[in-house]
Amino acid sequence: MKEEKYFIASFRYNKDKPEDFGLKPIVNSDYFMDSKGNKWKNEYLWDNGWGNEYGFIRQPEPNHEELWILLTESTIVENQLGAAELLNEKHPFALKEKLQILFLTKPKLNRDLTKRLEHLGVLRTGTNRNKVLGKTIEQVESDYRDWKKLKTDFERLKTDSIWKRIRKSY
Image (cartoon, rainbow, N blue to C red; front, side, top):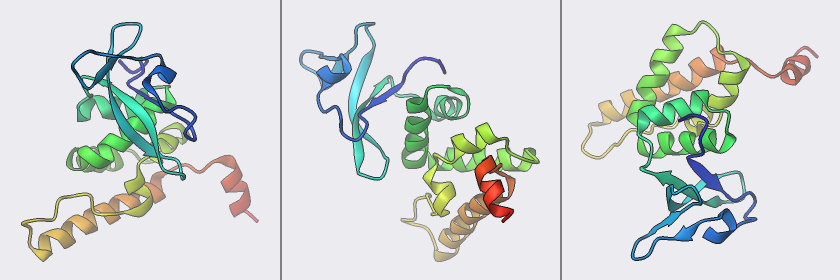
C-alpha cells in the first residue's frame, strides 16, 4: 500500500485536466480511471502557498489508519501530503489520538518523522480541529488545550535540520 500512489496533484497549477494525469473519465460517474484500472476522484488538495492544487484521490479513499501509514511510512511525497491533508480535514479526532500516543511513547522524533509530521498544519498552528457545535465552552477550551499541547510536544520532540541547528548556534 505505502509504495503505491494514492494522491496525484498539480504543482503550481501545471496540470488542470484529468488527461494531464493520464486519467480517462468513467462513463456516467464522477470518477476517472488510470491505465492500471485504478479509480480516482477529483479533489482540490493541499495548499503549497498559492492555493489548493488540482488533483485526485485514489478510490476507495484510504481510512484514517491507512492515511497514518501513508504519512509516516510512504516514500511518495504526494502520499505524505495527501494523507496529512485528509487527516487534518476529515479525521482530526483519530489524528489527535495517534499524535498523543506517538508523543507519549517517543523520547525524540528522528528527522524523517519530523519532516513527515511537519506536513500536518495543526502541528504548526495548534488550532483546535475538533467539532465545536453542541459542546460547552469548557469542552471547547479543553480540546483547544489538547491541540496546543500537541503543538508544544512536537516542538520539543522534533529534530531540526542541520541548517537550523547551525543557525541556532550563532
